[in-house]
Amino acid sequence: MKKPVIIDCDPGHDDAIALLLAFSSDKLDVRAVTTVAGNQTIEKTFNNALKVLSFAGVDVEVSKGAEKPLIRELKTAPEVHGESGLDGPELPPATIKPSKRSAVETIVDVLNKSSEKVTLIPTGALTNIAQVFISHPEVKDKIDRISLMGGSCYGGNWTPAAEFNILVDPEAANIVFNSGIPITMCGLDVTHKAQIYKDEIENIRGIGNKVAVMVAELLDFFGKFHEAVNDKFGFAGSPLHDPVAVAWVIDPTLITTKSCHVDIETWGEFTSGCTVVDYNDVEGKPKNVDVAFDIDREGFINMLYEAMKKYN
Image (cartoon, rainbow, N blue to C red; front, side, top):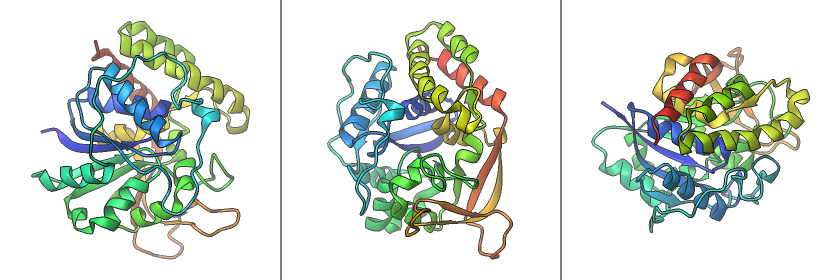
């Protein structure tokens, strides 16, 4: 039986690839896609989701979510994803009609109508998910688990302490991490190991269908940013952050996790947005998160390769 999921995202090159990985899988039933501001403004991330899914021939409800964090001003990442949020390939206008429902309305409705618990896969800031929990706390019982891309145990990528998705809306992350729902955190500790190399991008391009070629073009642009920062992080390729959160839901055996207590820093002058992972169980608090630390990189890349072969 397919696992019902909702994907909440801010496309974003790696979000787009995460979406395509999810929709190719015979193990997932993607009930809805919702978007949030983060990598770019909400109008851009929403339009990018519509365009990517339309290009891939996917039929799904796509709903627009929060245009800014709960209480902060929006941070975006044009230096990584370009002015459109999805620079690189030239995608035609979307054919999927935008949902008339907000992200919160769609998530709540899908959860309430599901006969089985649903897994949430957020790959951007956690604003939409937090808004669901604030406005409809009763739906928490309908959620099986949250597999998210965000955070880190050992240092950030946007500040010395914080990963971008959590940094955008730490208050929302604090609500989600304290929700009582099981969480798998696919943060930088694992996603920096989920790199794709140039020869592997060429292998994807060589599949030859239009979606695979588009993904290769996304990775070409994405790779330009990472080439510029490779010396800082010791990268040999480009880390595919967001698809890891999807890959864990498809096949958890690819990823090694450790149960830890995780708190979100919301006030620190230099550490705002930090996911404080009690790796050594110093405080003995309840373990609220399964933190991902390692990945079978070759198995992950093969999963992505096989996914792209399924498109026309």
